[in-house]
Image (cartoon, rainbow, N blue to C red; front, side, top):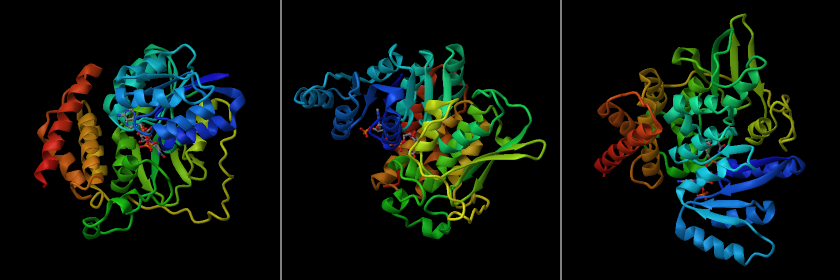
Length: 393
Ligand code: NDP
């Protein structure tokens, strides 16, 4: 039995993770679950999975949850509160696997804590790698932790890497990697049409059902930009070794192009339970609940170049990767603020890249030597992005 801690259990990845754990009950025990606001869903999860601990960072909500749990028969779950508890549950000796599925840079410290505690980390929270790539990888290596990607593209790439490959290494014999992108809900919109898109349209992804922040990132193609940076750290590659290819059907999840002309791809129905099941069981395999891929039904696999003109976020991310240092952290923080402003109807969709570019232009790029540096840069970029959002009013 492996002990599992699911950070962000109430979100889209968290729920899919619990689906896979339910299907493979004999192999896993759920040690800890964490939520931010959705205590109703958290209670349902507690009733079913009976974790030893739950974390709700906010003290008031945690107190409310303690009352709910005390009136639920046969539940001995301990309710922890405070940001620090998110880190503490990853360090428990009963925990073997930490699923990092909090959204945004809010997931950074708990992911680092899991690395320092030498756990197997299933990384969905790409933002933590984007903002602190070298520091996170160094914590993984120093503490003999394992970092396995959950993002479908990176999980696909990991599966296509040479035998014995570990994330962070430079694999031999690779010409480049090809990250596929669905293109999101606005793939065929013109620059002019993009000026008028709504929040609902941006959140309606054609192939994947996801949280709202990543859905907007997919619509702006910032998600692919963040994934380019994530891939560069995970697979130790530079920007010129990473291609983005639009593949609207989301059946090929990514490819590795080898120097002998072989291109290895991983295919499957677009369902996050596949990479989750893979990373939980790796190097073995287990059921995920995902139906078998039918290539007669899915017989149109098409490809096209991404448009950097219509999706400037993708260009900004490549530029931040080339600039290195604190540029990815600034990009990420400004993007989180801009997406939040779009989701609360304070800026338009096309203003997201404008906010990010202005913040990137204003802030000097330095080297982040510590997590404290990263947190400071993140805070400054957020403050500047908030000022830019205000200026749009
Ligand atoms: P959701 O918004 O659905 O879920 C986010 C989770 O994080 C929820 O459990 C939420 O709690 C919790 N949370 C939010 N803010 C905080 C905070 N400040 N402190 C602690 N917990 C917090 O997101 P997704 O599941 O879609 O995405 C999670 C991560 O996985 C993101 O980094 C995303 O980029 C990545 N990812 C997602 C994919 C997907 O298919 N959804 C695919 C690949 C990567 P609550 O619900 O209680 O508010």
